[in-house]
Length: 99
Image (cartoon, rainbow, N blue to C red; front, side, top):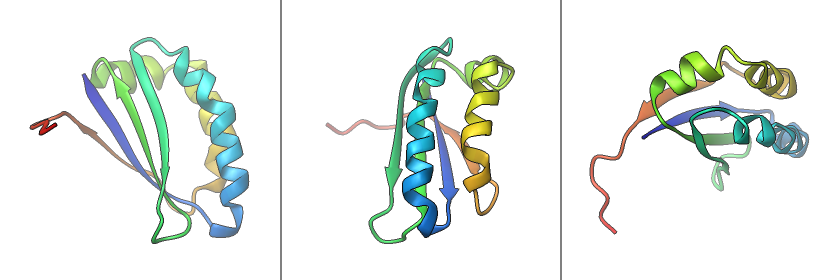
């Protein structure tokens, strides 16, 4: 399992509308092959800063299967207009799980 971690910047005055758009996108991730979880985290310290964390079977499940799907096109259609800069995406795996 891997996690897609995307840092997202949104204009603070568009935050509520952005969050509503992300909520509409949840079913596209839920229905994606190889997707196990999805969450959007909001920065407490920096308005407009978000982190998207999605658990996938593999990098290919995200980068090939999902990105080539209608679900990804729907995600982009719902959310891309809110991005103040291109999302910064990393794929990570757990190195140590302390508790």
